[in-house]
Image (cartoon, rainbow, N blue to C red; front, side, top):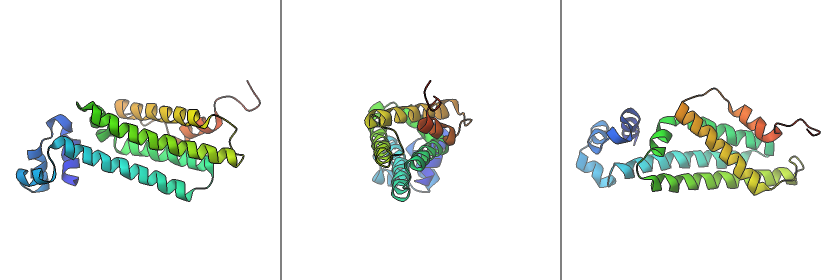
Length: 180
């Protein structure tokens, strides 16, 4: 899998092929086809592994962090760090010709992140840390903002903003306490 990741990173999805991947892996093309039907299946497997790793990190974070505000900060940090670290793969994946594959995995990730954020908001409300709000709507809004941030990281390649700034905007809002 490491050889395939390197080939996709170096050549992109279109120029990567099973022959290059097999050569980088030190195996025959036929041997590679025993494991994967085509390069799309191989690429999707790599992306799914990266997604599962992120979701596992978020699950671990949720299991160890009790403070809802710290948990929101941690979730935002993990997601942004993941996007920066995997920029090449996210860019390739979002530009894949077979959009249905991207949509399926994207929906899965988005749904899990929204559910996690919603649970954290409910916990924060129950603990008296967060104000009453529509948890689903707020979780969806935060998720959408994170997607927008990831898109700017991936497309523009900018790493100027940081997770702490995003977290504080989500947690504190733009208005000063006490009203407008």
